Image (tube, rainbow, N blue to C red):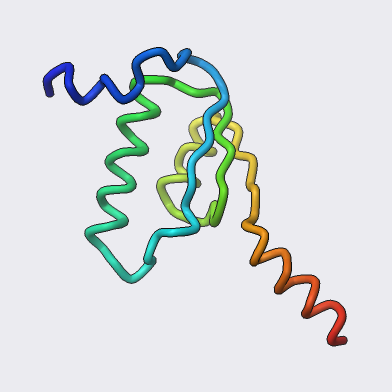
Length: 92
């Protein structure tokens, strides 16, 4: 791979906290998931973050694998998810 692929991370400190978004992924779209996993692997290889804030689902295998490797994963559920949880609790 050429250096062009690393321009995206230029100026971002390594061994830091980064945030990713998984809520827009279509779990039924295998191509989209593979592209996301490829990008996540590349980002973790280049930046080597110690912590990743995940906006959306943390149940993706690639995210769980990072946790198994010692990367701290902080889930940040989308506001719509929280709204559904609150609505469900008020319906009971």
